Image (tube, helix red, strand yellow):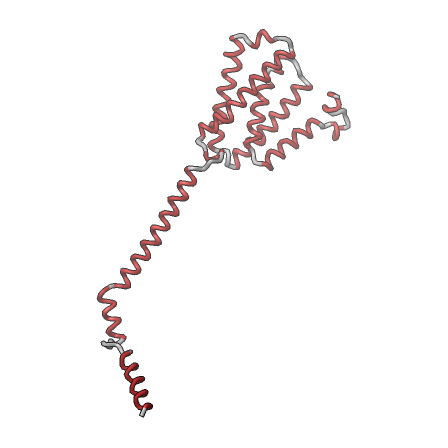
Length: 217
């Protein structure tokens, strides 16, 4: 007698698991389309992706604005950071030159300050500011390379071949400009420029004559 009761219990469980209201698939699809639930879910997901993209863009912009590197500084700040040390270097080299030629009194003269120091420093700042705007262009890099080669050649030639005071007074400004162009060049251009000046300094290796370096020794 226990077996029939067990079968009846199993049947009651199966009957209790049946849904109260059976809806066909077509009816379910029609209800979903009428209520627009899928469209709402899609719009909410699109909005969430859009907010995430907007937050990512905002974070990228903030990172660019807060770039702590030298390239992230404003141009006028870069000009001051580079121009002030080079100006001090120029004045220091000019001072040493006057000491070497025993004409230190002319270094402190107003004519020297007005005719040489101020124009050279102002021109140096103008060159730094303008060239910093376009220093990443290939044309600017080529100009830096050619200018540094000429400046290096001029320094070597004046210092060794024509060391008169009138010519030597040009070397502090040329040296400051040479250093500036070298630090602004890409590594490969700077190496090329330095190699050419070095070969000119030791041109006796190719001509068979005594090189400038050997003459100095």
